[in-house]
Amino acid sequence: MKNLKVSVVGLGYLGATQAIVLASQGFQVIGIDVDEQKISSLQKGQVPFYEPGLAELLQLALESGKVSFTSAYSDALADVDIHFICVGTPLGEDGSEIDTKYVLEAAASIAEHAKPDSILVGRSTVPPGTATKIRDLISGSGKVSPKIAWNPEFLSEGTAVMDFLKPDRVVVGVEDEFSERLLQEVYQDFLDDNRPFLSMSLASAELAKVAANSFLAMKVSFINGVASVAEASGASTRELALALGMDPRIGNRFLSNGLGFGGGCLPKDISGFAETAKRSGNLAFANMLQGVIDVNNDRVETTLSIITRLTKSFTNPKIAVLGATFKGNTDDLRNSPAMFLVNRLKDYGFDVRIHDPMAGTDDIESDIWNNLEKVVEGVDVLVTATDWKEYKQLRAESLERYVARKIIVDTRGIIDSDSWVARDWKVLRLGEGQDFDG
Ligand code: UGA
Image: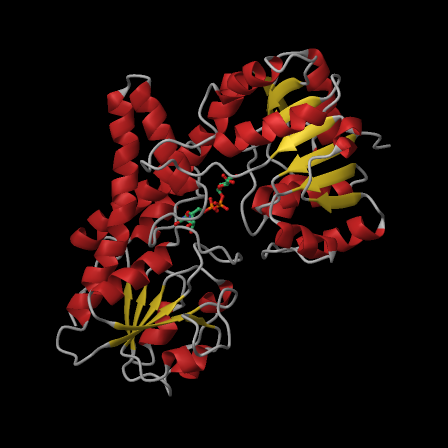
């Protein structure tokens, strides 16, 4: 029995998933976004980005009449019990602090229509203090206003539907029992003893998100830092990651070295958290977080210098970069280390072709292609830049008739290198002590 009515404002990767999954679970959902094109594609049953499993759930939700999409804040919101704010929080103009203007605007627009016994729940990533700022903003409007809660999201692109249906935990920041009860009602079916509902203060809930993402970023930079030491000392990062990860206090996830972390979340959140640390007077912690960012930026430069060394005797070397998205199983190019590498290679005058199984097209005029044979034709060096499963399954024999030279730089460490070496390929893998000179 799902009697609650829900609105979701902002229909990007997070909001669209929130709206569609809740509707598929029986909640009555109104999805709102200012982007008319997004609304019309969702109304037609098309998810405007790639997220496995979401299109199927959208079909079900539309057929059952449980979801509607609109670009207008209207009186339809007057009926709604819970308003989820899922709008973007980009980095501000100076590139450090997270900008909350869209969150504040959305909250003000919702408050104009919302009933007093509804709750307004922020899901976007924000600096601490944003929820209380919203509370003050809407309570200044004169009428009895909805209550404020914060419910950070922990969805990963590529597995967002499963992450929503089976969360590790649900975190809510609340100031009153009514909000806590409504949120419990929303999430109760997704939780059990191992997947708890954690209720805390607004500030803790706000910080839980940036702290979690910053910790994940730190883990990735840690293993990438280890990788640079391993490269210089003849050790293998793959072996080290195994040894480290088996300590349950460390854990084996997020220990894959590569080109560094990217996407719409980790890079932004760690910058925002570093700025928050600085503003709260903790320069040492801010510097530590900045170190994580610096190590991350270094991986693309290291790869660039490996490719430069490898090709120093070649005339007009051609490079095929395999992967454009920031990780596999998404079409998201935001802050993609693969694309940063492409741009740096171009800066250095390399002739670069790019392949991506999802972001690529057939169009020869576009920058990113999906025809692998065409991309690798006549190239001197292949570079795996994204951990797509298509690249894990690559076989040397299927590509060697197209390439000019049998050299592959495996930045993500995903190919079965022994089988490539057995066919006389030179395989260079980031994080492994080996001869990087051509
Ligand atoms: C991240 C978090 O994992 C989610 O928990 C969070 O909810 C989400 O941000 C968000 O804030 O919305 P996502 O951005 O989808 O999710 O991507 P991740 O899976 O975290 O990967 C981030 C980056 O780290 C990718 O570029 C990935 O390739 C890289 N990575 C990850 C590594 O290089 N090595 C690893 O071992 C793991």
